[in-house]
Length: 112
Image (tube, rainbow, N blue to C red):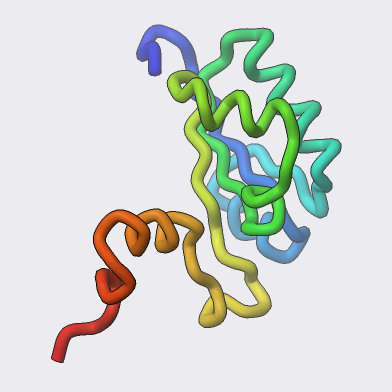
């Protein structure tokens, strides 16, 4: 990211989860849907804005041309996935599948 430009800290997800992000000064979009995510990403890309974007899992795993573009281009917008507030124990990051594919199915098992 270009350090001369300000970086926006943005979080999108369920309203209850966004309350915590809002308390620490993050720009929040409570109860955002895929259309809102795509609209925001289009604005970020076309304005060449730097952003760290926290997305609740259902948004991070959604399909959309702007999300696909941002993930493939890298650079100005960094996306990180956050677990759902209502079931954090059931959450598994999407990167787990990639790690297993590269290192084998036992790669993420706990060692005794």
